[in-house]
Length: 275
Image 1: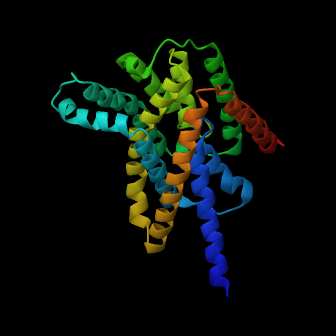
Image 2: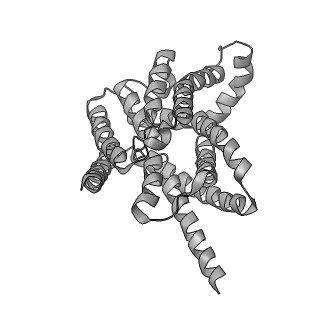
Image 3: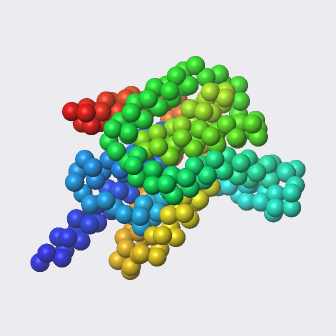
Protein backbone atom coordinates (compact mmCIF):
# COMPACT_ATOMS: atom_id res chain seq x y z
CA UNK A 1 0.00 0.00 0.00
CA UNK A 2 2.84 2.39 0.73
CA UNK A 3 4.98 1.67 -2.33
CA UNK A 4 2.82 3.44 -4.95
CA UNK A 5 2.62 6.54 -2.77
CA UNK A 6 6.38 6.57 -2.22
CA UNK A 7 6.99 6.14 -5.94
CA UNK A 8 4.57 8.99 -6.75
CA UNK A 9 6.41 11.30 -4.35
CA UNK A 10 9.76 10.23 -5.81
CA UNK A 11 8.51 10.85 -9.34
CA UNK A 12 7.11 14.24 -8.29
CA UNK A 13 10.51 15.12 -6.83
CA UNK A 14 12.26 14.12 -10.06
CA UNK A 15 9.83 16.17 -12.14
CA UNK A 16 10.39 19.19 -9.90
CA UNK A 17 14.19 18.90 -10.10
CA UNK A 18 14.14 18.43 -13.87
CA UNK A 19 11.88 21.43 -14.39
CA UNK A 20 14.02 23.63 -12.17
CA UNK A 21 17.22 22.62 -13.95
CA UNK A 22 15.72 22.68 -17.42
CA UNK A 23 14.07 26.08 -17.07
CA UNK A 24 16.82 27.85 -15.12
CA UNK A 25 19.99 26.49 -16.78
CA UNK A 26 19.83 28.88 -19.71
CA UNK A 27 17.92 31.75 -18.12
CA UNK A 28 20.16 34.25 -16.26
CA UNK A 29 18.75 33.28 -12.85
CA UNK A 30 21.09 30.42 -11.75
CA UNK A 31 20.11 26.77 -12.00
CA UNK A 32 22.66 25.65 -9.38
CA UNK A 33 21.34 28.23 -6.95
CA UNK A 34 17.77 26.97 -7.33
CA UNK A 35 18.85 23.33 -6.98
CA UNK A 36 20.71 24.16 -3.76
CA UNK A 37 17.72 26.11 -2.44
CA UNK A 38 15.21 23.31 -3.05
CA UNK A 39 16.28 21.03 -0.16
CA UNK A 40 17.23 23.99 2.04
CA UNK A 41 13.83 25.67 1.78
CA UNK A 42 11.51 22.67 1.41
CA UNK A 43 13.09 20.03 3.61
CA UNK A 44 13.23 17.57 0.69
CA UNK A 45 16.20 15.24 0.55
CA UNK A 46 19.20 16.43 -1.42
CA UNK A 47 18.93 14.90 -4.89
CA UNK A 48 22.51 13.64 -4.92
CA UNK A 49 25.18 13.58 -7.59
CA UNK A 50 23.52 11.08 -9.93
CA UNK A 51 20.48 13.31 -10.45
CA UNK A 52 22.65 16.43 -10.67
CA UNK A 53 24.64 14.86 -13.50
CA UNK A 54 21.49 13.53 -15.19
CA UNK A 55 19.67 16.86 -15.35
CA UNK A 56 22.82 18.53 -16.66
CA UNK A 57 23.07 15.90 -19.39
CA UNK A 58 19.46 16.66 -20.29
CA UNK A 59 20.10 20.39 -20.63
CA UNK A 60 23.29 19.69 -22.59
CA UNK A 61 21.23 17.73 -25.10
CA UNK A 62 18.76 20.61 -25.39
CA UNK A 63 21.36 23.26 -26.21
CA UNK A 64 23.04 20.95 -28.74
CA UNK A 65 19.71 20.37 -30.51
CA UNK A 66 18.70 24.05 -30.45
CA UNK A 67 22.05 25.34 -31.74
CA UNK A 68 22.81 22.34 -33.93
CA UNK A 69 24.06 24.37 -36.96
CA UNK A 70 26.68 26.05 -34.75
CA UNK A 71 27.50 22.78 -32.98
CA UNK A 72 27.93 20.99 -36.31
CA UNK A 73 30.21 23.79 -37.55
CA UNK A 74 32.39 23.46 -34.45
CA UNK A 75 32.51 19.67 -34.68
CA UNK A 76 33.61 19.82 -38.31
CA UNK A 77 36.41 22.14 -37.21
CA UNK A 78 37.81 19.83 -34.51
CA UNK A 79 39.89 17.62 -36.87
CA UNK A 80 41.61 20.69 -38.34
CA UNK A 81 42.15 22.11 -34.87
CA UNK A 82 43.82 18.87 -33.78
CA UNK A 83 46.33 19.29 -36.60
CA UNK A 84 47.17 22.80 -35.40
CA UNK A 85 45.21 24.65 -38.08
CA UNK A 86 42.66 27.34 -37.22
CA UNK A 87 41.96 28.39 -40.77
CA UNK A 88 38.23 27.64 -41.06
CA UNK A 89 35.18 29.07 -39.25
CA UNK A 90 34.57 25.69 -37.62
CA UNK A 91 38.14 25.29 -36.36
CA UNK A 92 38.09 28.87 -35.07
CA UNK A 93 34.82 28.30 -33.20
CA UNK A 94 36.10 25.06 -31.67
CA UNK A 95 39.34 26.76 -30.61
CA UNK A 96 37.60 29.74 -29.00
CA UNK A 97 35.16 27.49 -27.13
CA UNK A 98 38.11 25.47 -25.83
CA UNK A 99 39.88 28.65 -24.67
CA UNK A 100 36.73 29.94 -22.95
CA UNK A 101 36.31 26.64 -21.09
CA UNK A 102 39.80 26.39 -19.56
CA UNK A 103 39.27 28.92 -16.71
CA UNK A 104 36.09 27.29 -15.41
CA UNK A 105 37.66 23.80 -15.52
CA UNK A 106 40.69 24.96 -13.52
CA UNK A 107 38.55 26.87 -11.02
CA UNK A 108 36.17 23.93 -10.73
CA UNK A 109 39.01 21.53 -9.95
CA UNK A 110 40.29 23.86 -7.23
CA UNK A 111 36.85 24.14 -5.63
CA UNK A 112 36.27 20.39 -5.90
CA UNK A 113 39.64 19.39 -4.43
CA UNK A 114 39.59 21.95 -1.61
CA UNK A 115 35.98 21.34 -0.60
CA UNK A 116 35.10 25.00 -1.07
CA UNK A 117 32.29 24.02 -3.45
CA UNK A 118 30.25 22.62 -0.56
CA UNK A 119 31.11 25.56 1.70
CA UNK A 120 29.56 27.99 -0.79
CA UNK A 121 26.21 26.15 -0.92
CA UNK A 122 24.39 28.40 1.57
CA UNK A 123 21.27 30.55 1.44
CA UNK A 124 23.26 33.67 2.37
CA UNK A 125 25.77 33.19 -0.46
CA UNK A 126 23.00 32.59 -3.00
CA UNK A 127 21.07 35.60 -1.75
CA UNK A 128 24.04 37.92 -2.20
CA UNK A 129 25.03 36.54 -5.61
CA UNK A 130 21.44 36.70 -6.85
CA UNK A 131 21.19 40.34 -5.81
CA UNK A 132 24.65 41.65 -6.74
CA UNK A 133 25.05 39.90 -10.09
CA UNK A 134 21.45 40.74 -10.98
CA UNK A 135 22.32 44.44 -10.61
CA UNK A 136 25.53 43.95 -12.60
CA UNK A 137 23.53 42.27 -15.40
CA UNK A 138 21.13 45.24 -15.45
CA UNK A 139 24.04 47.69 -15.65
CA UNK A 140 25.70 45.77 -18.47
CA UNK A 141 22.45 45.37 -20.39
CA UNK A 142 21.50 49.04 -20.13
CA UNK A 143 24.95 50.60 -20.56
CA UNK A 144 26.76 48.06 -22.70
CA UNK A 145 27.30 49.09 -26.34
CA UNK A 146 25.84 46.99 -29.14
CA UNK A 147 28.40 46.88 -31.90
CA UNK A 148 29.46 43.21 -32.08
CA UNK A 149 27.84 40.05 -33.40
CA UNK A 150 28.73 36.41 -32.74
CA UNK A 151 30.93 36.38 -35.84
CA UNK A 152 33.16 39.04 -34.21
CA UNK A 153 34.15 36.72 -31.34
CA UNK A 154 37.90 37.03 -30.85
CA UNK A 155 40.58 35.27 -28.80
CA UNK A 156 40.68 38.21 -26.39
CA UNK A 157 36.90 38.07 -25.90
CA UNK A 158 37.01 34.28 -25.42
CA UNK A 159 39.57 34.64 -22.62
CA UNK A 160 37.58 37.41 -20.92
CA UNK A 161 34.29 35.51 -21.16
CA UNK A 162 36.03 32.39 -19.87
CA UNK A 163 37.09 34.31 -16.75
CA UNK A 164 33.55 35.61 -16.31
CA UNK A 165 32.26 32.06 -16.64
CA UNK A 166 34.57 30.83 -13.86
CA UNK A 167 32.82 33.21 -11.44
CA UNK A 168 29.60 31.25 -12.05
CA UNK A 169 30.93 28.41 -9.91
CA UNK A 170 29.70 30.44 -6.94
CA UNK A 171 26.10 29.24 -6.43
CA UNK A 172 23.49 31.82 -7.36
CA UNK A 173 25.71 33.64 -9.85
CA UNK A 174 24.23 31.96 -12.96
CA UNK A 175 26.56 30.73 -15.68
CA UNK A 176 24.37 32.10 -18.45
CA UNK A 177 23.76 35.34 -16.56
CA UNK A 178 27.42 36.10 -15.89
CA UNK A 179 28.57 35.25 -19.42
CA UNK A 180 25.77 37.32 -20.94
CA UNK A 181 26.81 40.15 -18.61
CA UNK A 182 30.41 39.87 -19.77
CA UNK A 183 29.37 39.73 -23.43
CA UNK A 184 27.18 42.84 -23.06
CA UNK A 185 30.09 44.71 -21.46
CA UNK A 186 32.23 43.67 -24.45
CA UNK A 187 29.69 45.17 -26.83
CA UNK A 188 27.71 42.16 -28.08
CA UNK A 189 24.00 42.61 -28.76
CA UNK A 190 21.51 40.75 -26.59
CA UNK A 191 20.87 37.98 -29.09
CA UNK A 192 24.58 37.47 -29.80
CA UNK A 193 25.47 37.60 -26.09
CA UNK A 194 22.91 34.88 -25.35
CA UNK A 195 24.06 32.78 -28.29
CA UNK A 196 27.70 32.93 -27.19
CA UNK A 197 26.68 32.08 -23.64
CA UNK A 198 24.71 29.05 -24.79
CA UNK A 199 27.54 27.77 -27.03
CA UNK A 200 30.01 28.20 -24.16
CA UNK A 201 27.73 26.07 -21.99
CA UNK A 202 28.26 22.97 -24.17
CA UNK A 203 31.90 22.17 -23.31
CA UNK A 204 31.41 23.53 -19.77
CA UNK A 205 28.42 21.29 -18.96
CA UNK A 206 30.17 18.36 -20.67
CA UNK A 207 33.31 18.88 -18.57
CA UNK A 208 31.24 19.17 -15.39
CA UNK A 209 29.35 16.01 -16.30
CA UNK A 210 32.59 14.08 -16.81
CA UNK A 211 34.07 15.36 -13.54
CA UNK A 212 31.01 14.54 -11.46
CA UNK A 213 29.79 11.62 -13.53
CA UNK A 214 32.78 9.44 -12.77
CA UNK A 215 32.08 9.57 -9.03
CA UNK A 216 28.32 9.27 -9.54
CA UNK A 217 28.60 6.22 -11.81
CA UNK A 218 30.69 4.37 -9.25
CA UNK A 219 28.01 4.75 -6.59
CA UNK A 220 24.91 4.38 -8.79
CA UNK A 221 22.59 1.37 -8.72
CA UNK A 222 19.82 0.43 -11.14
CA UNK A 223 17.20 2.48 -9.30
CA UNK A 224 19.45 5.55 -9.36
CA UNK A 225 20.16 5.10 -13.08
CA UNK A 226 16.41 4.79 -13.77
CA UNK A 227 15.72 7.99 -11.85
CA UNK A 228 18.58 9.69 -13.68
CA UNK A 229 17.20 8.70 -17.09
CA UNK A 230 13.76 10.11 -16.19
CA UNK A 231 15.27 13.32 -14.86
CA UNK A 232 17.48 13.74 -17.93
CA UNK A 233 14.56 13.34 -20.35
CA UNK A 234 12.39 15.81 -18.43
CA UNK A 235 15.23 18.34 -18.12
CA UNK A 236 15.88 18.06 -21.88
CA UNK A 237 12.26 18.92 -22.71
CA UNK A 238 12.06 21.78 -20.19
CA UNK A 239 15.38 23.27 -21.33
CA UNK A 240 14.45 23.12 -25.00
CA UNK A 241 11.24 25.06 -24.34
CA UNK A 242 13.01 27.59 -22.08
CA UNK A 243 15.70 28.18 -24.70
CA UNK A 244 13.19 28.77 -27.48
CA UNK A 245 11.16 31.17 -25.35
CA UNK A 246 14.16 33.18 -24.16
CA UNK A 247 15.76 33.54 -27.59
CA UNK A 248 12.43 34.68 -29.03
CA UNK A 249 11.76 37.16 -26.22
CA UNK A 250 15.20 38.73 -26.61
CA UNK A 251 14.09 40.10 -29.97
CA UNK A 252 11.59 42.36 -28.23
CA UNK A 253 12.54 42.76 -24.54
CA UNK A 254 15.65 43.29 -22.42
CA UNK A 255 16.99 41.22 -19.54
CA UNK A 256 15.17 43.44 -17.02
CA UNK A 257 12.45 40.88 -16.10
CA UNK A 258 15.17 38.40 -15.10
CA UNK A 259 16.96 41.12 -13.14
CA UNK A 260 13.79 41.93 -11.21
CA UNK A 261 13.31 38.24 -10.39
CA UNK A 262 16.90 37.97 -9.16
CA UNK A 263 16.63 41.06 -6.97
CA UNK A 264 13.34 39.98 -5.39
CA UNK A 265 14.59 36.44 -4.74
CA UNK A 266 17.93 37.74 -3.45
CA UNK A 267 16.24 40.07 -0.94
CA UNK A 268 13.95 37.26 0.25
CA UNK A 269 16.86 34.86 0.70
CA UNK A 270 18.92 37.42 2.60
CA UNK A 271 15.93 38.02 4.84
CA UNK A 272 15.73 34.28 5.53
CA UNK A 273 19.50 33.93 6.02
CA UNK A 274 19.87 36.81 8.46
CA UNK A 275 16.39 36.77 9.97
